[in-house]
Length: 106
Picture: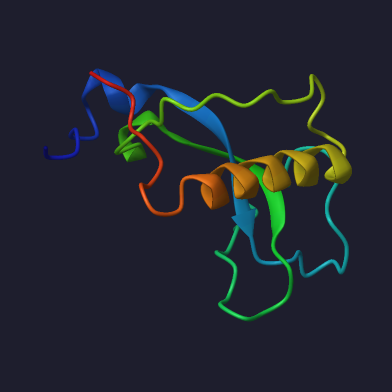
């Protein structure tokens, strides 16, 4: 399916997602939301351990949603809370390694 055009309704919605990102250039994991205009980079293969960050993005960028649900803390401003969710997701990926993460049934 083609991505919605910028004027479509789907492009008007933003979602917050947890993504593994390259470590912050500030030298430590940021607490709280990213700075306005901050650019999050994907982690490099074999590079430093990625930091899990809350990243706001357009709903139109989502291609698939998994049917797997994990519990997340109420407050994700703390780097340790975000890291815990990252470890949980990594464990889920390890458990379904051969089959892949199941998509949500439309």
